[in-house]
Image (cartoon, rainbow, N blue to C red; front, side):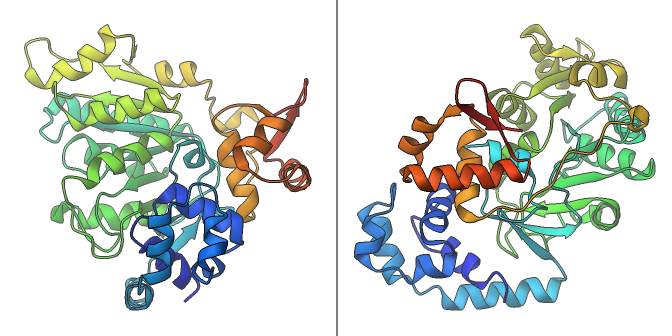
Length: 358
């Protein structure tokens, strides 16, 4: 029942991810947001009259209770945006999920690279994805992909069999095995890394879910490697998200006579980094093997107000006055919240009065 009110608030029509974060920042918790009056809701920036009416009238109880029961029965867990285990890179996108369903273990910060590509991959593509994933895992880099057939499956297996971590971002409920032949792979990934989903329990793998899944694959990663993709491949959507999110895009060159190579080769023409071996990725991202002695990045939990300012600063450094204007918090609230973020190592004060994420 720990996340009963999180499920409840997310189930309210017209309450998307951005509105959810604004509500918990303003009221302190999902439960308080759901108990707010019409007058109190009208004072929250970005909450429309229609959304407020939906909050006041929606019967969230049946769904929230059923979702709690489904999570408990499945053995899955829920990691919310205030948890130290919530991936901090994910907070850099405009609409981070308020919570993730999880099987396995998430770390707040870890070096990760995504490998994506065609579901109808050639043997060359499968071998290349497996090799790159294996070598990345051997260097302590987590391999992220989408559990689809073809390149995704090869990437997950490559990391797992090398004894490394892999994160599979699902386009269905955490309790749904898709594709059905990947049951053993799902178990292996959960045992050494993590399966995650933002979709409710039991959600079917609908076509409209996969672009949303793709934005999370790229957000979790320092870079995205495309291995074999047709001209209209979903992998190119992931690459586009990566560029929008400020991530590096890599592509493995393919046979110029093969239709399944046109997407990846096209990315290289447009400036994506050509990848032949794992060193091409590590050098571009300045990722060194774990023997370099660098300290692990800090992990931290957040209060609702800290989460709102952290997401705001993820978009770029801001001065105090700009933070006050964009958050609509008082100067005192912003000052106290920034101090808390600084003490946690989440935010750094720059010369000129700017603040940025660490």
